[in-house]
Amino acid sequence: MKKCTFQRCLRAVDSMTSAQRHELKATIEHRDKKDLVAEVVSLVGTPTACPHCHNSEIRPWGHAAGLPRFRCRGCKRTFNALTNTPLSGLHHKDRWLFFLEKFSEGESVRKAAWRCGINTKAAFLWRHRFLALPACLKARKESGIVETDETWFLRSYKGQRGDLPRRARKRGGRAAKRGLSREQVPVLVVRDRSGATSDAILPKDNHREIKAVLEPLLARDAVLCSDGGGKGPIAVAAREIGVAHRAVNLNKGIRVLAGVYHIQSANAYHSRLKEWMRRFHGVATKYLDHYLGWRRMIEAFGEHLNSALWLTLSIGHHELQHE
Image (cartoon, one colour):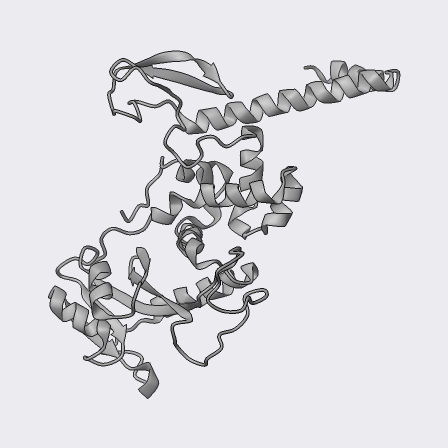
C-alpha cells in the first residue's frame, strides 16, 4: 500500500462507527493470526514420509487446523507435519512463536500465560511440550580431554497433590539433612574441551550407573578428568570402560594436573546451571531432564536461540553440531 493511501485509511478511522472500528480490529487480528500460522507452517515444513509406517509414498489430502494434511498410499492413514511430535494437538498456533520469544529467558509460566492470553495450565503444558525433544538433544560422542563431575539437586515433588513421602515445602525449600542424602538427586555432567555437553540424572550415585552413561559417550582415546581419588565411582567406571583417567583433588587444593587436566569447564557449567535454575524456585524431579535440556540449548546456541529455532528444535528438525 502506498503511503498516501495508508494515511487516508488512518483518517477514515475517525469517521467510523464503534461497530465498524470493532470489525476493522477483528479483521486485522484475523489477518495477523493467519500470517503467524503461515510462518509456523513454513517452519514446520513438509513431511517426506508417513509418520505411522514410514512409507515415502504420500500425497496431499486437504487442510485441517491451519496445517496441510497428507495421506499415505501404504497404510491409508492421514497426518500432518506435527503428527507423532510433542506439538501434535496443541491449539493456538498463531501464539506459538510469541510464546517462544521469551523462552530463552526462562520466563515464568504465569507471565507467559498473561503475555500470550492463555491460562497458566496451558502455558505449563506448552513449556514441557516445547522442551520434550530438546531434552534429548545432547552430545552423543566426546573425545580428547573430557571433564566430568556430579552436581546435586534437591528432590522435589512440586505439583504433586498427594502421597508425598514428607511434608510439603514452599518455593523449593531446603533439605532436612546437611550434605548429600537421599533427598538429593545426582546429575552427572560430561563436557569435553570443544564444548560438547551431555548430562544424565543418575538413579544411584555408583560406578555402575556412571559407567552406563560414560561407556557409549566416550571415545576410546579420550582422557577422562574428574574430582576425587582412584577409588571413587567415576575412577572405577573409567577403569572398567578402559579409558585413561586423571583425578584432581579439589579438597586438597589440587586443581590442575600437568597443566592441562582439570574440571574447571564442568564446574563452571555447574555454576551457570545452578544460577539459572534459581529462578524456578525448585523444579519437580520428574521434569528435571527438561530443564537440563533447556539449559543445554541455551549454552549450545546462545544469542541465536530465537523463536524459529526453538520451534524447529521442538519438532526434531535440528541436531546439535556435536552430535
